[in-house]
Amino acid sequence: MNPMISEAAREFAAQLARQFGRDAELAKRLADAQRRLERANHRLWWGLHPDGLTAVYAEHPTVVEAALAQNRSEVLGAPDPLAALQQVHHSTRTAFTDYQTAAEQRRQLAADVGETIRQFVDALIAAGWSEQQARDANVHQLALTNENTDRRS
Image 1 (cartoon, rainbow, N blue to C red):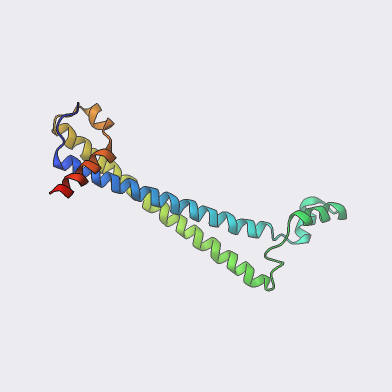
Image 2 (image 1 turned 90 degrees about the vertical axis):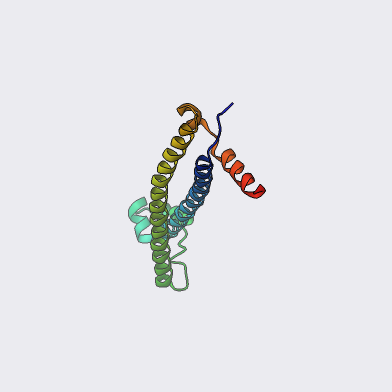
């Protein structure tokens, strides 16, 4: 059985639960930006010019024809190839910026989580928990206990 849980420890648990939720949101944003980067990259790759495919696959017409059959040009096949290239460029730049922003926010959040965990563990130890008990504490359960206490008040 665990010792008493101080109000400070409950608050830190609730803060950690919110931070964990924020981390999950940032992970989704990173995954979304990565998918958009991959999509933009595929649009460019599949848009290779036949002369480029000839250089990659050799000059034999049969090899080039087979390569062309697998490498349909989304960009070059567009009604306005320049506009399609500009769109891919914009998509790549936007996705990369979104990825960098989410990664930086996640890095900053990780530092905040580390500090909150230290404060949480310190608060539990001050309330009589052993360090191992504090480290093994279920943050989400303590956060829910805090929410239930707030609702009854």
